[in-house]
Length: 414
Ligand SMILES: NC(=O)c1ccc[n+]([C@@H]2O[C@H](COP(=O)([O-])OP(=O)(O)OC[C@H]3O[C@@H](n4cnc5c(N)ncnc54)[C@H](O)[C@@H]3O)[C@@H](O)[C@H]2O)c1
Image (cartoon, rainbow, N blue to C red):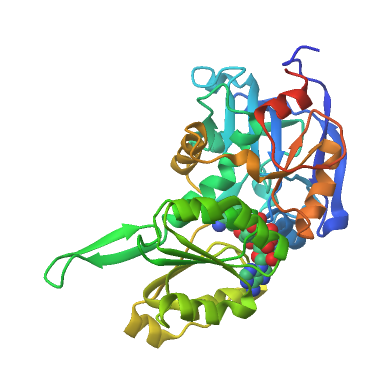
């Protein structure tokens, strides 16, 4: 079969209700594009801890807007690299068959289709690929017009960039975006005007809570802002060891004091590192309410905590000491997903070798391994990212890093 011959059916990993037992690998029809859609072949897709949130919350997830997967199964997967294989006539000028794209899954738009499946379709301002829009743990994906109109289908300019690197530009872009939501108000002198600077405070102390796959990217990107000290708190020994293995050398070379610690030791470590003042930046790279709440206590004057991980709807309320906001000017920021500009920045970081996504890959498999991968992510058995190649069938293999050559060998395109 030629690369772009399109079969009638395909396999797709779907959520058919709420809970892990409702994840099924199913044979479904390959949809054909209407004039305003594009059919893409999925080259690879990565799993994310956020996938667990839609699995556990179903219609209650904020990006589902009441859509019930028990009635209308959804295909999971929101990080991936795709190739256009059939282009609806409306897009003929803009998209060519064979063009490769990264997907920016959080689409700032209402849905063009299936309005009756949402609680209030007219009120929706954000939908997402791998939620109510078809996801990427499938051999093919139908791209709806709102994804293209909002520039969420982003061409990969570099033909040599491996599929896995293009796919990982999405989670990396979320970290780029998140860190640009932190800000510091600075003044050269008491007489000078105030200025706002985005990102971690150069010369300051950055605290990172959680060294999962996203936490490690936060650590890498935080280093580029040039803080004096980065403290990483993580209870899992293997994850702390991985952070040290990846970054201790670079931190030393760049004059950054990298301190790895546990939640139990954290208060003492912060006191020691900041002379009791508190940190300038905190990034909460996990979605646990008490940890988010506690993060405010670690901040020094002018400090900013960045709530990167989302919490369940029931856990949405936290308490904050209003006197510290008033007297110490502490702030809280957060972000979910990224913009196309952030994906472009992430692609540039990868293309110019300033960030090597391959070292973060710790499992690969075929589409039949996608369910196992999601389960491994749910149980935090994965040290890094797992990549699924939907057109291949193979069990999940644990690996320690991944390269363009290994990808070509797996796909038989060497
Ligand atoms: N904002 C966004 O755009 C965005 C994008 C992708 C992922 N996320 C979210 O980011 C979070 C992190 O993702 P991940 O893949 O690294 O998740 P993960 O669950 O693999 O990692 C979280 C880490 O936090 C550690 N941890 C648990 N309790 C802790 C504590 N008290 N103090 C410090 N560390 C603690 C865990 O041991 C684990 O290593 C998830 O909530 C995910 O949904 C957000």
